[in-house]
Image 1 (cartoon, rainbow, N blue to C red):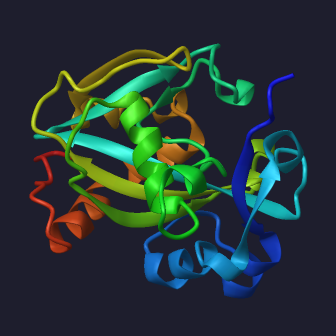
Image 2 (image 1 turned 120 degrees about the horizontal axis):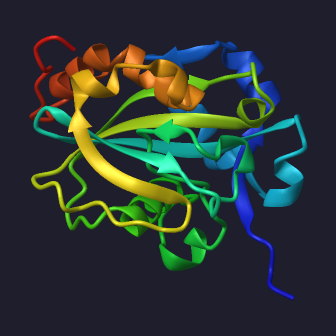
Length: 216
């Protein structure tokens, strides 16, 4: 029998102490240092974590930008999260596995795990990214047990998009097009697209060479 994946979590009561919010927050310094601190994290079997509302699973959520376009894909049936099947997404990433502690030597594995997940989906050699927001969505069953960390990743070409069974038809689309029909996106993507000009501005202020497209 295959060994079950164990994923990086923190206790929900930590979020309650820091301040529960709904949707997207730009206060990354307030939350990120605490929810990734070695003293505050633990690894749980994924099947248990998905059902245990005492914990939040920490999920990198990376928006991939090329010039005035953003990478978009549709959630496929091969993805483990069945509650998102068929919806559009602009976020690349996934759970941080306990295996990352064996693969890398530093810390609890958040940054390394984010890079591993991203490189499984996107063919990149350089991590030109910035953290710009965090996401909490307690309005859905899937959202209640997850906590997102939003990164902006800048790429120099469009042929970086790979594809596993969980991703269908990855493509770069103009940001103005991606902003249309928000109901077709998963909730985390809607939060990001609704605030995308602000997220891009924050990434630019942090040193990333991005621009906010006219009309976005």
